[in-house]
Image 1 (cartoon, rainbow, N blue to C red):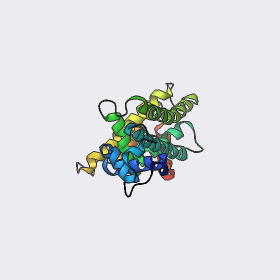
Image 2 (cartoon, rainbow, N blue to C red):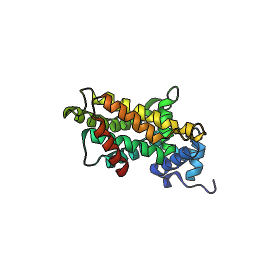
Image 3 (cartoon, rainbow, N blue to C red):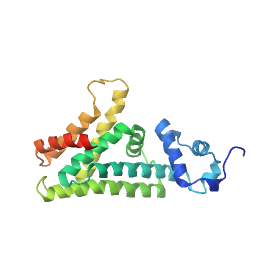
Image 4 (cartoon, one colour):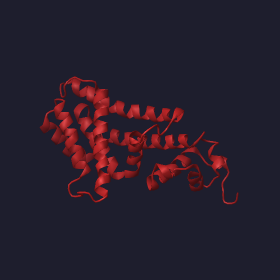
Amino acid sequence: MAGHRHGSEVRRPEIVAAARALVVEAGPEACSTPAIARAVGVTSAALYRHFANKDEIVAGVVVAVLADLSARLDAASAGVHGLQAVVRSSAAFLRFTEDCPGEARLLDHLVGAPGEVLPGGAATPVLAATAALLGRIARAFDEASGVGALSDAPGALRAVSLWASLSGAARLGKVARRGVTVTVIDVRSVGREVATAMLVGWGADRRFVEQEWEEAWRVC
């Protein structure tokens, strides 16, 4: 077909990048195989030289997004540990939802949509990447508990609870964009308040947490 490249000329990262751009611009529903093929400049059949199906392509997009988010969390918490790392990771996540709303909506879609968004084996790399990201935060929670900055509890449970709460706060941005009490809903402020309340409830010193938030906004 005229105007198309050979499937051997395109690489997996290029396909993932094109699919990611479609998701960011128009949402996960717009990420069809024909649309991806057009964006890359190949036939739909050529995509299957690199991916078994569309689900695998979407999984590749999610893994790439999670890798970018993990890099942000790592950069924000570089050189700090325990409770400091938890606060800075939280701030980095909220900043990610501000800077990359399309990618944030994709992550939210995977969790919030009814049923399996990525069925079968396509979900395996996504689950592994999610577990690795949450594992970083869980270790920070465990470190905080180990030095008495927080009460004792499984770090993994707290990491998942914090992630869910911050994701819920970020979702309020959708309400704000639709003009509902825009002056009241500020995702960053809501996320900070929710995370602070959780951390203080788990034994953190409020003054220390508030100071860390100020530093976190500076470095994120």
